[in-house]
Length: 390
Image (cartoon, rainbow, N blue to C red; front, top):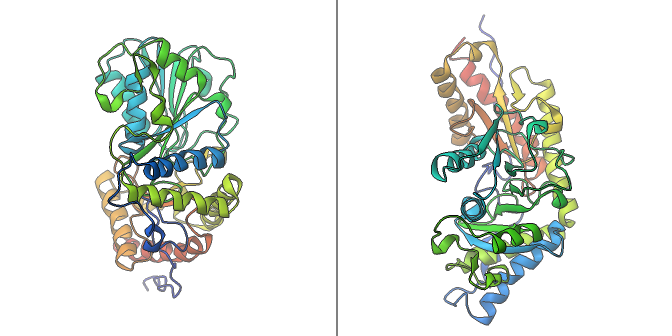
């Protein structure tokens, strides 16, 4: 007799948005939050500059960024922020790049294939793992991603980065900022985007620079021509207006208003401490379920390196692992499609370059109750697809 299928759950998540970017809006969000946006006004106006500067000051305060760091709003999301720094800073000393998921691999490719730096090393790790930090030479500039958005693995807070180092540490923290404690004293450049942990809208990036990074920018100009959109310095030194709200290009004042709404919400839930707690609680919900699951496991096997935001799951059932890569991809997509059609979990497929599986966002804007509600649906969708293969 065929095994009975799991019954369709009766409880649905209140918010089915578990995408890893753009991410869920904060609880209770509506378009009314944007009613005071400076639409039709210049971002160069007194009021426009004040709103942009408010994004900067509130962000610095919530994150606990050191007072002597500068923070600016830059074009093209986190990607733009990272590329600005790679092209503006790298090239005067050797470089180590940590590559353990899709975006960090992109930075490595840019450094090797586009900037063509002659003395660059790429330290790799498989999806779900992190590179061996003991192999890093901190006398070199180091480019790393703090949290692997596409792999579900993150660096630990106490990562062995020396306080005293000759090189600069450039950190892509787009899915870590506002969800994880960052050791600012061990970093020199930190970037993120609005559409991740606070659920903001896309296309705007944030670039934070330590005094050491500023000194490098000013004292050692980039050994290459830079387009305007990448320039952080001029003949007078650092273009400090960027770090007061004078953006390089025209920002969306609707997005600015939305970013401010997210920051004010973050303050209302306890600032960084509250945001971290909410994200860690979400990881704990999935961890409890994963420990009981017969078919799903975290892509990151080491709990110390397991992301609380981009929570990646692999399918370990024998019928699934017996499939070739194309078959696994097709089966995982069927699970994702069923969840989407039921409108209980939207956009939860693993990233295209990652092993086939599922990825659920666990950042602070996601309610733990919604994750608890969606987990039986994962079991249900899995069973529907399994039945087609066994």
